[in-house]
Length: 261
Image 1: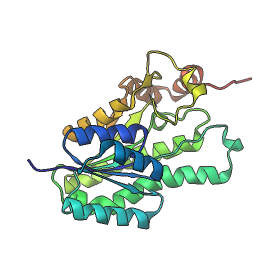
Image 2 (image 1 turned 90 degrees about the horizontal axis):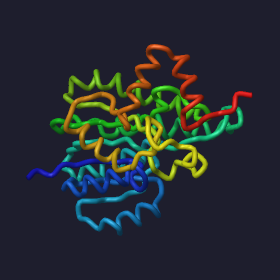
Image 3 (image 1 turned 90 degrees about the vertical axis):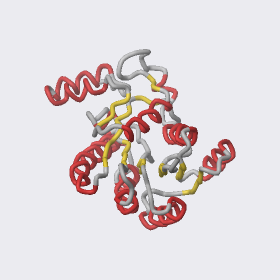
Image 4 (image 1 turned 180 degrees about the vertical axis):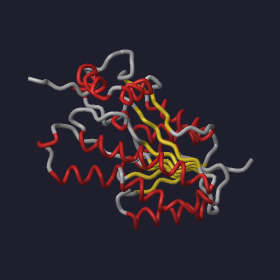
């Protein structure tokens, strides 16, 4: 059986970690990359597999990204079945209360981190049949949620980049897709938000393992957008039909409700 290869950023916790575990279980070779070296060491010890390498990576550093891909390519014989651009950071709070530097950091990691990954790995993807470039967008890439303004902007940008490249990369037979997660059970979800979440509907808390399963489905199928949970696609349709109505629905029922008086 020919071994398959996946390169995962933000792989040492949350959705990335769940994806690492699933693909190891399925016999893939996994490159796990994260800025948190302590989490990488812990994950490597936990999994203890010859099919796993864990390396520190700041995705906003293009030179560092290129070096990571070069090392990976020597293991994979210049093949890459899935590039999973998953690394990202969140912000919380009103736009004007956030330091300007925080906004820049969100854009550099969430958007330029994806761009750096694609630039660095494009030749490996082109060299691999049925390869997939998969990017993590967000439900905030469907409609901007309150108190996540620049985070939302970065995830809209990832969604737009995905749509454009899904057309462009057809000439290389590379699939390009994104995942738009709702409220996923990861360390990014604060206790305050958890306490307000419903038990059903699009804003319910979803296990990180559901993202991992979606990554595998995205490789097997050919769709541009993957909504997790699938209910979020209804929000996308409402945004197209009536953006103001979608905004008011998010204000009243979303995970980041805000006082209006």
